[in-house]
Length: 130
Length: 210
Image (cartoon, rainbow over the protein chains, first blue to last red):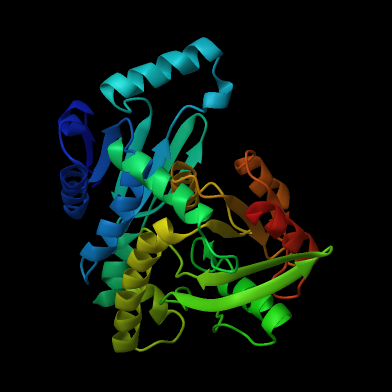
């Protein structure tokens, strides 16, 4: 069974970078898929990768990460200004960030209108181990 | 905000007083894109010797490799730089993936551990780069989050970027797809292995750094 945990942006808004990342990674390490409202800052995405690498061990293999964000080039000038202003005041609430544990999620495929989570066949793996 | 201004100011000052020949040119990208093959191509073309070992097994480069004082010439112009080949950046590393290449479990675990450290080092070095070549495998979907994150970060740090769509010698290569994925960047399609279109790459390198 797959568990998706939704995290509203308000839950990470007041946190600094390391606390934000720690909160998201702790959920992923419980084999849950994080669905975060909005996105992290670009530097925080890199920091997420860096800290993920530090956390990797025999049990935790890392993450699959995907950020869905409306393309600015498709927006009218007024919408661009409005979005930038909202992001500046309230944080990057636009879009969606998905963080899945690599032990479960093989790949996240992006499509303008759909999100595909390709999962690993855990049952087959278990059978093989027996 | 203050940190960002500091970084931009430091970058400006370091560029202003940088001695010619001390430009740090980084090769970045996901594992197996062909960074080391390109590094070897550049190093062999201009120094007559290879730089590192390239392999089909992911995460072959697990430490930062530097080749200092590479001087290149193209169309009467000259350029000197230190070439920095970095380990591939990934969001996951599973030692079991290395077992598929016939590695023993102990060796695979060691490689995975070293690979995670390599990714951390690559990220740490981002700030030291004056210009970056992002090497992508043109046979693979370019829309991966790792690619987007690397390129987005370089943009945020105001580091000039050139995209290389490598492995154009392969049938599955889709140069157009890479160009479509990153329309705001120059993309050069090459085969680092065979040296195809490498002259065009050197021309673009001059454009990037000058």
